[in-house]
Amino acid sequence: MSVFKIVIIGSGNVAYQLAWHLHNSGHEIIQIVSRHIDAAKWIGNLMEVPSTNRYSEVSLLADIYLLTVKDDAIDEVANQLNLADKVIAHTSGSVGLNALQKASKNYGVFYPLQTLSRNVSVDFSHIPICIDASNSHTAIRLKELAATLTNKIIEADDQKRLAIHVAAVFANNFTNHLFSIAQMLLERNGLSFEILKPLIHETVRKIQNHDPLNVQTGPAIRHDEHTIKKHLDFLKDDHQFAEIYSALTEDIQQWKIGNEA
Image (cartoon, rainbow, N blue to C red; front, side, top):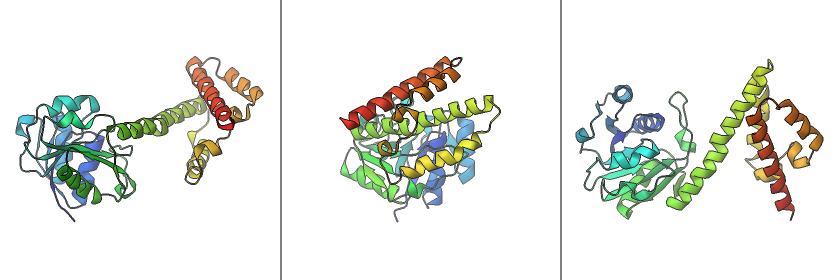
């Protein structure tokens, strides 16, 4: 197994999870760098490594630098780094590869396709990691690093990675927001969100072996207009929720028409 010295740049959820799992996989995390020094120190203290909030103090002793900052901060941070021929990769699904070209001649993308939270443990062996690189040397190094976490390694250029990221927003972020709406509707009526969890689990279980389109159920796919009207009457005082319900209902019905054509 390849063992690398790594600098983590950033101190959010992705920074924490990558630092912790790479550390546990035998790599040496040598520094945490973040404008948020308290968060950087917290991560650093877990592994007894130094931290700094000054990009001018970034160690030049690492083999790989992982830039885990927010998407809209990648350009700004990359422009403050001068790593010569060191390997640097950002962890974004939507930011282009060339955002790092001023930081080093060996730059790439190391994008873990998973929702990551600091207080929720994850098993990286099940997580796909998308790789892109400016050259073969960088690609090899990033694949070697990824292979110490998972065997699900995917080569994805900017366009493919953007498609993955957009799809992930639909599958994860939007779905989670709908869960929040469902929870709010239940709690307003004295009910617990727990009642829906078996339904949610079964929905996810079914798509393990079936295309989602082929296992769609509910009043929209049945064109059950009586039930749809009853639901919209229930939501008459929640205009925003009613609009979401109507938009999704119409889209499901349009998909059915298109699939039958």
